[in-house]
Length: 353
Image 1 (cartoon, rainbow, N blue to C red):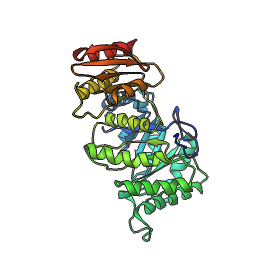
Image 2: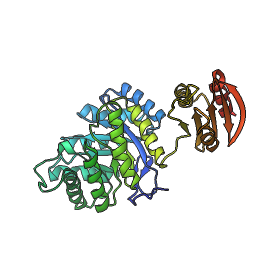
Image 3: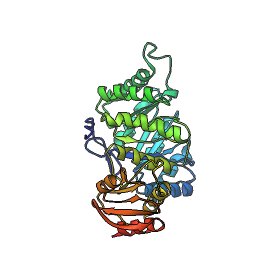
Image 4: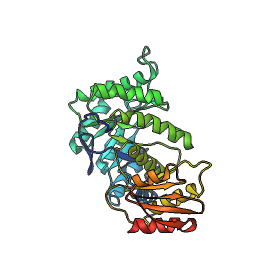
């Protein structure tokens, strides 16, 4: 089944388009103070290498805003400036070369200040992301509505105010720390507007639980065709956000890495080290120890004869284990038997071929 994506406006951020027919973009956020230019650039280069397509930076003061100009000289990726409370910082960031700004309706409220931001964005032809988090909205508003609906209403109310200024170069996001509220809010916004939507959960937490929450929340919306760009927000290295973002999109068939490793979950029938082999194969691919074709490449690492031969045959290349040995399959055909200690070496050789 192919996911039918919601039709949204196309918005250009630097050299990248989101919405319209563009693929769902993966983004992250630098976690170093923006005025520490050398360190920020170093982190951004690692993020770009991992596949990050849009990077957001915090702008807390004028030093951060002015640093954007120096950062832009060294990177070739769209840069979004994250603004809270102080509208003047939004103006400074745009003057300094930000490709997009994010403003929060929860703390930039005065109509005159919003108008200043819109006019500068219009002059610079810069999109504005209206990003609302559940923790920053006035909970007394829309009292008779659910938490998700209140979040959506906060976004839509702000959008209508900006639309009165005849500005529609917008991206919207509504994030809660709960999965159900995030899903509800984005469903409402998707129905009421045609603007591109940025998906994510805010303050999702630490470790595997945060990953699961993000996968369920973001994945549910994407499976309905909702969402044009994502960030898997983790209390962790931002590079992990990018890797998990691509894995999430690949699982839904929305983006493809150059490879996909299929591995069995292991059981009492397993007679080779499937877990260790799978990790070593992934590690070799991530570190680019082997070159892969531009089309997606499927690799199977299977532990026994029950599902192994069938799964390996469906992959471009794969191994199926026996007791102390394994078979290498290529394009559906078993090509040879290999001792277990040689399985990784021989598999990587075949991938290189």
